[in-house]
Image (cartoon, rainbow, N blue to C red; front, side, top):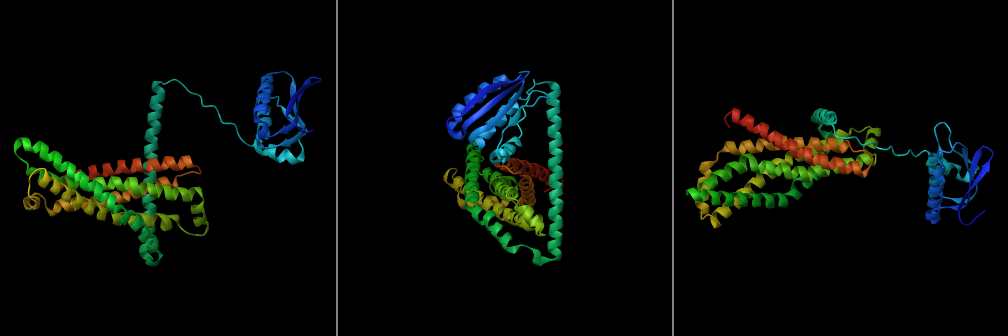
Length: 377
């Protein structure tokens, strides 16, 4: 029988049969939805219910899902609604739809002190898991580095140079532009406030120390975390989703050595270079504003800058750069390898990579500040 779909109720002794006829496809979606919704009102009936589909002429995935939905709705306790008369042509389709599990209903509860403490505990446990994952990745990278030092030919030089170009060379314009503007802003604000005390020239001291010790490398590290860290996470996450990393393991390659180590090495080499260029751009921008806005001649600016800073300030800033780069790379790779098989997971871990990378960069900057202060630098 073909034509419009129907769902008739027929009593058979102590049982009730729902006879489906016609074409059960997405073409008749509105009609099918209404019929199934009406039939679902029979839920709770003491009678045994059979769904007879022997007269269904055509069936697609939409129709099969509606039949399975009706069966689940009419199943009560130990009494399960049965699908009868299923032809061999459509049995595999209905079986496949039956394997789809219903989404469990999430029960919402009122906010309580116990629940809040539980959330805090879970968050603390999550932090411990994050730190453990970072330490594990650090150990894996150090082990891969040791193998490369023993067998230098195993280093992926082409991959390293490629990532160095992406991380360093292509990042130079945006790094220089932003640090130049930051230097301009620091100089302008310093001159604006120091002018009240007649101490315009001291803006050079402030600019030199801030840029070389703190602002220069910290700002560059944050931008690298947002630019390159997120890219690393997205690349590794996409490979994880497409099972390329599993394929590497199957072929006998170590993913840490092939994928992570070249990225880490490129980042560790790139960040000191970018930090130096960023510091120079910030000093140039500050000097330009000091000349045009504060009336400090370039020659006087350079003389004062030479007296205000020392090589120690430069060393403090440059020493931080490779450590921050390693932290950013480890966080990005850990998050990338933690991606599951969905686009939502990729987005979540990419966001988490940027947030955690910036957080750990700031923490490391504070640790370095305490360390250098304790040794008199």
